[in-house]
Image (tube, rainbow, N blue to C red; front, side, top):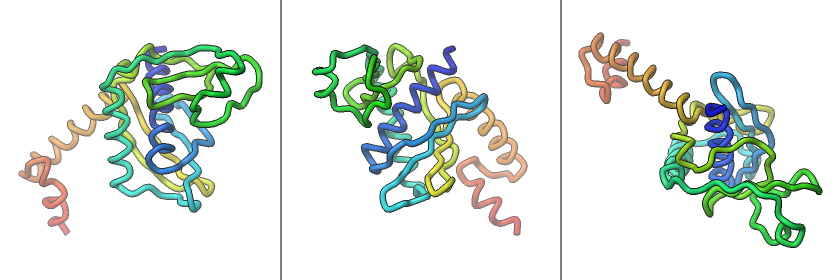
Length: 178
């Protein structure tokens, strides 16, 4: 349950950052056993994100996670619902449940969420690749992100020792093996 909330909460925050920073709209979501992904429709039918955009998204979401902002879920009355600054229109017309994360994300959702953004832990984007004319952004959050970092560091340390190179110079050392 905690893992699911970390991934789902991170998905909300990532989708909100993509919408705010890049103008992209999330049109699909997959919460998998090892990673999760969102399919995003980008302006001008773009199907890629740059390295700089990925870093911008990660930095934005991780900064907002660290704020440990409250996550509020409620069923507003119709008049209140009309005035809310939702990221996208609800897909249902009755019993609309709103999820607000701090003052930076608000959307209709019936899912399970943590009580605050800090409970998401962190986010790491694994890839952003073309998929069916959109961008598929694959990511991990919370415990999954910590485990991924441990795995990457384990192999980076092994490669560093094998190439007698500090981790931050591995690319240069590996490039010289041609």
